[in-house]
Length: 138
Image 1: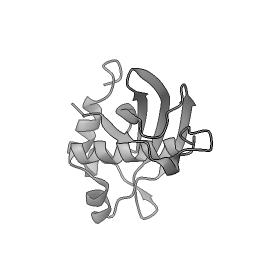
Image 2: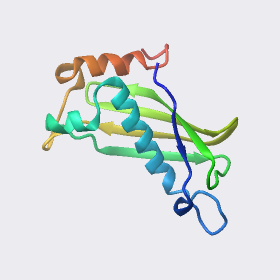
Image 3: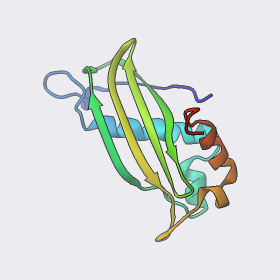
Image 4: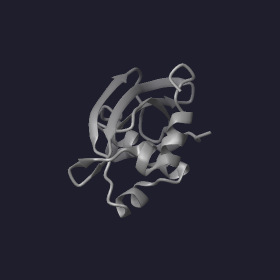
């Protein structure tokens, strides 16, 4: 089970109304995704040491409720979709019981300009991600 990623909202991440600026949620997604990959034993440092990068192919956010300076944002990352070449993640961000944002991102894996098959080159990571899929998709 992947633990929830938690972080405090910093002052510089807020706009003049004291609300977290919308652009920061993309950064928060990356922080939570990096933490999740570390928990799986395939941190970005390890992947990059093996010459593999994971660029973002798409991202979307649906803002539900503002977060503010000093609040703790909890981010749960889950796997939404998985193929040999791509993975889609879902994010649920909350402050306490209040839903702040739902989001999704899609990523591929590349070595240079060539796609990397997760199933072939990182079978344990592929299996871990597959186990995180919702039951109907797994």
